[in-house]
Length: 468
Image (cartoon, rainbow, N blue to C red; front, side):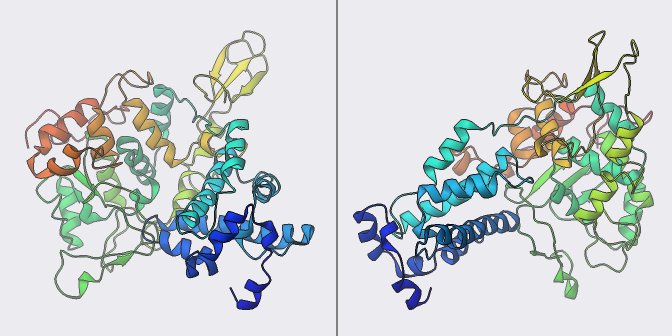
């Protein structure tokens, strides 16, 4: 901020004399450039996409404050440090809540970003008090920010997965449903991250001159999900000598928090689906790093828009969710022929997607599909598979699946949420080198993972009925 703008600061908007005094004692850089300093501090601590959203939210608030509120009140507002609670309420009610793209949960998250900003400014002695605290609390008390994801019975999910016919969509969806992987994590899987005990796999690996990542080289029928990194991060090809160590700059980041990445067992269904996909996957001989999931158009790593079109857009591919919805559309009650009432049941114990007959009161499940009439949390997105995997394998929780994967294995080693519980034992003493992978990870996973009965004769995986 220029000296001229500093001189024009309207200190009458300071809440208390203490606040004004503390401003005078604040660190110079945090006082002059609070937004730049805050974003600089956050860089490297949050993923790029979240940092972008955070920066955009704060910029929107700054613009609303300095252009809308300042003009209306004829106040000499210079930046976010001049904000008071009423300014935050105005931004909340007139900007965030009126944005049709934001649901209650997202509005709460955006206000939380602002709250983080003011908490940091207060710690840096750049401001006294957080003007967001009360408006945020008011919003959470008066709005439902915990929209439940839809309850999809196991038979319905099984029906959907069996409906998929294309090798790409079947393998991609199963990566999410079998392991709870995120969209970006699946996109970032490379051929070197796979170790499939099958001749087709070894033939493709040899053709592409791929050397397996050391972490899975001695573990057949496993897949590696890279550890956390940001968008635009170059992932080196460290196992190759010479210029090929250059690697690839990734357009999508990974959120996986487990140190060193996660080594995930393959069951027979996912193994078979991956072999099917590899048989039709376009060759990528000219690439330094060979991605697992490619687009047919240019044989390059699949990007999020391309995946979105393949899996959701009804005018793109036969396996899109919207095509599934059209094939399963129900106009009248199959039982009595009466008109059906569509229900979202957002406030029910098990919010789901179903129809209720006006006459016989019978409930009929409606399709799993991408419906813009639903709030984001209730759309069948790829991230839904992550939630489904968690709920189905939590003992006695969901009735989605009879099996169970132990909590430690499911959350830390498969989902990759965290590598420690935060206590001294987990942080200091427990080390992966002491674990027996087959007994501690593979066996409990294979004993609990659900089966969709996709194949009459699936290719059995290591640990499923035979010794490696």
